[in-house]
Image (cartoon, rainbow, N blue to C red):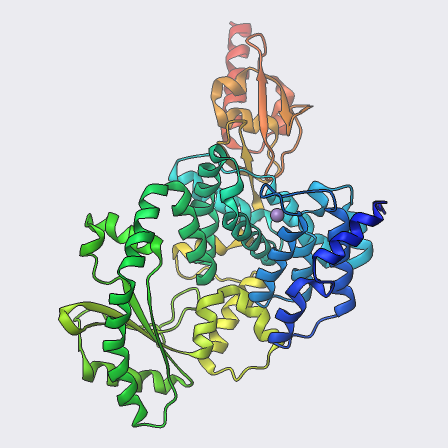
Length: 500
Ligand code: MN
């Protein structure tokens, strides 16, 4: 294994950072996760050595980035291997350490996770077209052999977005758009609300800096008034609930900046005219208490017709459960109130990531939660049935993508071809003329024979020559009917000319 010799620098880093893994350990203790401290420490030390001489754009040691990623993962209560992979996620890509080093030290599961993250980190989303975003998301899912690879990528992107201010300005918009279109969107579909909102807000900050600054300002200015208003709703609810034996936690907050921004855009209204800026959340212990609380709320404030949704009886497809109601509060303002149990709340915030939590904690799971967890298990086992054509389900049917590969042009355009497709198939997919005149291909910068089979994520450039013509043996190397059709057509035409 590669070993850096700079002992003084290593010592300095040990002084700079907490030797008990800089807060990761205490975070893990907080939810009393079982983990192998020695193994975790080994990963921490490997990451420190590997990134020893690297700095972030901010000037801080690179180690800080991988610690932050591991902390985000610990906060999502991911399993030990995922947190270790988080610590090591940039080691293979950026340092002299090899994947074999990681496998030898930490086993194949960690090395598979790191390998997965390395592979998808090389992919850049360039396009501005909406349908390309959809294809890109599918490609990511198809390349991630394990859902945890995507979750590590969420954590990586979240920390990169939190520190995007240090990245050169010209690079920020592309990264922010990729974050919004790809990662925030996937986090939403994975049901990880906490990650989704933060990614969306940070993306907005760098895509529309001016609007963002304005919004921050206005939300800040209206804060006191909003807090007073929230109290005018929560206090009476608390008083009524206190008459029963039900324990509730009630909180109010401004909605995320991104969601306020979307509302303004959608309704074409200024900030001052968006009234449902706040959401109130009631958290109770048991399912039946949710309905009791709902009754109290409706007895105190008039519900808005048509805005009540029972996601407890009918959970969203990503497992989300809650009661939603909108009521008319004081001064005639509309306020959304969400009511849910603690367990539902945890699921709503962490979505698919909650699966690992439940494996660790033996929480008192009620039947409904069990159902939602089972859904995640199904997903992980890739046994999602074909029922329901919901967009969310479609996206998560990773299994279906196993017979497809996703490929890039040098410009970043995406093509989806059947598994086993060759460079010739790709050439015909780009354009019939490109297919008919292709003489060679570059895959990821290397010149390869035309018969080369392509794999997901490959960047493919086709070399053409006007003198080149399709040949008989090409038929053996193509998978797509389009390529076969045009090759045969050409060969037939040649034959006709010759036999004439
Ligand atoms: Mn990273």
